[in-house]
Image (cartoon, rainbow over all chains, first blue to last red; front, side):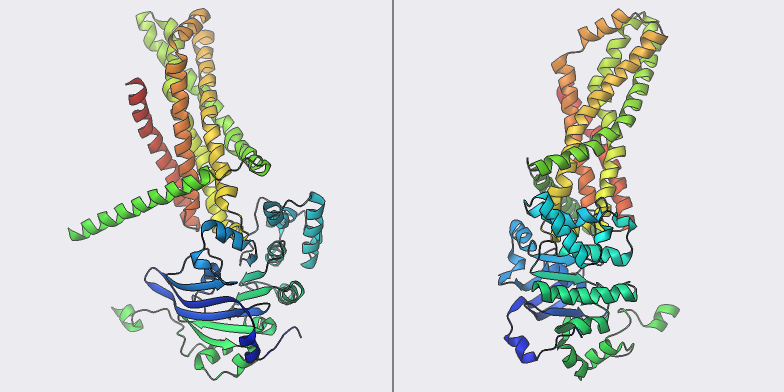
Length: 276
Length: 258
């Protein structure tokens, strides 16, 4: 099994790649994060899970510096992302990759050109070397034969795999996966699950995975964090979380509709709302 | 009353913020296009999309406007026995006013709206975000080539518009209505000044090119990443560009010829 278990004590001893301290972030009047503290260990797969609307994707965007928090620190490899200047931010992003939920392939470029894009943008590698690397990356995701297709000709699963090949084109230190399993058929999901784990171990990456798919995420992650209501409600190894007594964690992991996490978005009393 | 003041203040602040944001955006985009071969390749590709593909609408519109000008001008001038002046009338109207203004309006409708929709859709499908996350600045890679392509194309399109319009005037005035060809060209040559008319017309089209391209790329980049957001941004591009072109044309005409 791909799952790599380890003890909490070991996690604490591990070097952190990302450390988030007292993170506050709001959209309009709605607080998304209300003093979040978390640590993402170096070289491991960390799954961030939580109900819809808890800001999982927002957290990835905050880590990538695409949006600024209201308060708090996001320490990435020893430096605070929130204090980066524009150029520093773009330099830092050369060492990270993000797999978007939609794949976000450039629609006017072929599969080959999409994967070659980061190399053309950041390196002066000769064309034959770029070709070799592109084919290696596409081979890793099983799509070497699809190199000449356009993004519009790909299925959802293939799009995600091409996007993954593009994400690893420059061998980043950190990969952020935004809902990589959403809308995937069982075969594509199984392939993606394996790829994420294998790539992390083979390339020595740090992977952060945001997902709703509890079983898949827990099967490959070393460390899992559950977010709800603007806070971290549970954290630990998959086995620790499964044994957790916290009603919040239990409700989420077992998919129970009733519990501390409300199913309904805050609203007026139902009867009052209907009858006035 | 207080509510009205609050609303006014809020919309004033929002407009000021948008102007500030778009000015910073223009600054970064304007200086974002490097002189590297990569930058030039992107620019040439956009010049084709923004400029060359706008040629059909510019040439056809220029031809018909020149023909209409000659027809209308002739019917007025013939009453005074001055139909020989139809050439200078067509040329001055096109070079000073209609060339830059109509070409800019057509440019906003054809190329400006396409730029906004393209950039807006790239934003909605997270292509701009993914570019940012790859450490590639979309302002340099996506916006700058499009902005510069607009700046370079607009004056050239306006000049082509005027030239084709004069040809249309020739077709109607000389070939159809029988104005003497020698007078048509001679009157035009004697009355159209290079500095006063042609250069001022080109200056106008450069200004319109900056404004139309700026509005188009900013509206796309600043659009809400939804289908409705892109629709609103595209509409805003055409409306704001058209109004800006007409307003600026009055100001520039007052300064140049007033």
